[in-house]
Length: 165
Image 1 (cartoon, rainbow, N blue to C red):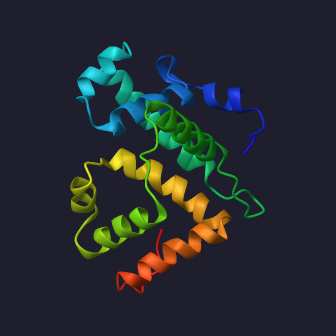
Image 2: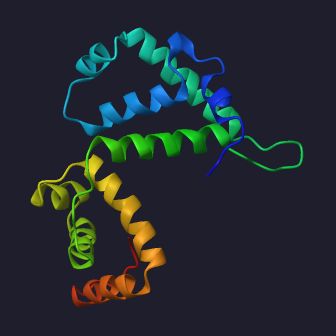
């Protein structure tokens, strides 16, 4: 999604030079969960105080941007820009774990039957991997009828009547 004036929007008021794109990239580093926060911040030459201030700033900007205008319309440009930047940075960080439609159906089933954490651990996956997979499979199942049929068939064979991605 193209957002008008994205570079200006992402830089406007950025504390300590932490524009929205850098904020998203650091957020991805933290979300990967493979390094301590202090290490992530040190590698980016940021202090905890700077990161805390940037987090408060960008959270507030996203909240303000999501408020309805006088006409009642909401165009959360900052949140959409962050979401897109986060997804791109996360996908650039590590490749998508290859799963078939059957394997994705089984992971979804296991997460519903036990817990997401257990379903991921059983496969040696992390929450960040799950985020990538959710984005991938949401798009794949929405755009590929044959793949969706395969997924639904496997879900049905597992005795699960819940719809899910």
